[in-house]
Structures are given as structure tokens and as C-alpha cells.
Image (cartoon, rainbow, N blue to C red; front, side, top):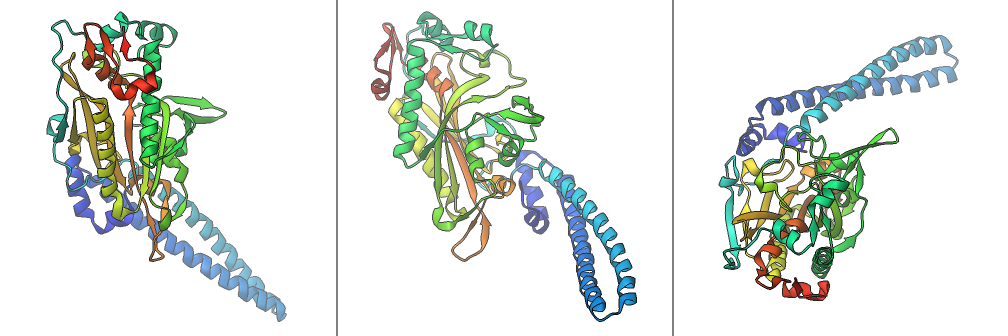
Amino acid sequence: MLQTSIIREERDATIDNLKKRNLDATDLIDQVISLDEKRRRLQTELDTVLAESNKLSKEIGQLFKTGEAEKANLLKAKTGTLKENAKTLSENLGQCAEALQEVLYQIPNVPHDLVPEGNTDEANEEVYRAGDIPQLEANALPHWELAKRYDIIDFELGNKITGAGFPVYKGKGARLQRALINYFLDKNIAAGYKEYQVPHVVNEASGIGTGQLPDKEGQMYRVPLENQDYYLIPTAEVPVTNFFRDELLAAKDLPITCTAYTPCFRREAGSWGAHVRGLNRLHQFDKVEIVRVEHPDASYEALEGMVAHVKSILNELKLPYRILRLCGGDLGFAAAMTYDFEVFSTAQDRWLEISSVSNFETFQSNRLKLRFKDTDGKKKLAHTLNGSSLALPRVLAGILENYQTADGIEVPEVLVPYAGFELID
């Protein structure tokens, strides 16, 4: 959530910067300024009334002590009127603050200066590419056919017990999934991230804190329980980042680095077509996440460090990949800058997104009320970052397709100690 003080002080710049998202936010920004002015005016009026009421209360006490009951009772009548005024002002202030919050929830984060302009993925900027695309046999298969041939993923069984987008992993397929999870976690822990196991269901406040709620796209699974709505997590980012909701940290505590494995649940409303076949797009999938809380002066250096970390994993897996800096139109609602990692699926002849690494600057921390006391003694909003390290389905798809041979599917060398086998045949 953008800070009202910055919107107020940098109105024109905020509107211009949001145009990178192909969004004309003029009306929303002006609503924020108008509501904020009203809120501040009401707060001033309320403070004045409360101060006058407190002053009169002290005078009344003194008058009763000196035996001037008649004067005291006259002032008591006046304080009664002031209390009614205070109650009305307080209610109006609450309504105004709620209206301001609702408008702020509609405004996405301001893109970083380096974010390219554009409205489609074609405007994303490729900043890095690595790995050789393997030359497969003419009869090479996409991963959903390989899964059926080697009986390692059963899409039809998942559809039977739940529905489309909920596959069942079997035998070496399940073991390879577990190997990837453990490998990713070990890499993250070795890089200094502390491992957590977290709930897979969160409350509304947690969804609002990281920007998943309000859910304008209808992508989250809602679970009404005990007169309260809960939500299945779309990523471990949500519970992990909410560790720090309403917290005041010390500058010496930063950075804070976390990693967690969770299943992730996404409705993927509106997704259809050949590009969603097999593991390309699922409603439930496994992912290992990394989350950082950083001092604002260090967050972009930390972002580059996260990018380098994910690169090291893909280099060890020996998968061909590229890194894109997302354009404004392709940027997530809460992100100020995002790098997407894509692995090349040789059998499908297309790039598959496997990771997003993002800096949210103060957007999430303002919603979360996540602050730290800096070395100068001032309380400031921290910067939050997160990234997939990694999402399993498309990594697995890339391994199955790029490592297929006439004898079976080879397992990347770095995964063999985790999987316990070298070949799927």
C-alpha cells in the first residue's frame, strides 16, 4: 500500500510513474488526497474538542472542591455537548479512515525506475541467458506424455479424486518431487536462509498484509470456517511475511532471511488452452520460497543477491534458462520490480516461468505495519522481498523434457544423492 504522505507530497510523480502500468490513477490519487485532507481535518477537530472537554473536566473538579457547585453544573452541561460532538466526530473519522483505506487498496505499487514500459510480456526485458538447449530426438515427447509412459504422474487420477489441476505423483515421480524440495531447501539454508514450516491456511488480515486481498482476480481459494473466512495460501510468502505484521524491529536485526516449503493453491481463473496442459499450470503445486526483510538502503543489493542465488540453482540443474525484468504492464500488483526466471522446454519449444523474484519496497510493510528503528532512532518502514527458489512443476517439466533419452529420463547429477536413482525408465 502506498503511503498517503508520499501521495500527497508527490502527486504528479506518483500518477506519472503508475502510467508505466498502463494505469491512469489520477482519480484514485485525488480521492486519496481529498479523503486524507478530510481525515486530518476531522482528527484536528476531534483533538480540539477532546482537549476542551479535558480542560473543562479539570475546572469542574476544582469548582466542586471550592464549593462552587452551581458553576460546576453549568460546565458539566457544556461537557455533555462536547462529548456528543466528540462521539460524532469519532464516528465520522472512522468512516473516513475506512474509505481512505479502501481507495488505497485499489492502487498498485509504483514501479522502480528501471522497470521498462509496456503492456504485454513482449515488452519484458531479457537481462540474462544461460545453458545450451539440448538437441532432442525427432520423436521427443512433452512431459505429460512422458509422465504417462513412465507412470510417474497421473493427471487422470488427480482429476478423479479432486479435479483438473490436481495431479498425483507416483513412484519415481514422487521421489523426484521430494528430492527437488530437499535440494532447494538445503541450497537456501546454505545461503543463510532460516527454514520454517508454516500454516497452509491464513486469515484475512494476512492476505491483506501481503497484497493478495482484496482478491480482485478471484485467484484464492476461500474457506469459510467458524464465522470467519480463511484462505488457502497461494505461496509461502503470505504466512512467512506475516510473521512480522505489527512488529517493530531493530536495525541490527536486519536483514531477516526465511525459507519455507509449502503446497500452493491457486484457482487460476480464466486459464485455458494448450499452454496449461500437464504441469504447465496447476491449482495445487509445491514450491520452496525465500523471503527477506531488509533495510531500505540494502534492498536492491539484496534483490540482486536473490537473483544470483536462483541462478546458482539452475546452473547446478543444468537447465537452459533466461531472466527477464518485467515491464510495468506485466508487473504484479504489489511489486516495485520483478525478475522472472524461465526454463526452456525443448519438447514444447517454449519458455516456462519457474520463478519470480521481487522487491516490494514499503508496499507490503505499510500494509503490515512492519517497521524498524534505524540507527538514528527514527521508526521507518522496512523493505520486503520474496522469490521462488523454486516452484516445482515447471522445473520438473523442464527436467523430464530436456533430460529425456532413448533409454529413459536421466536425473540431473546434483539430484541423484537426493533421489537415490539416476534414471527413470
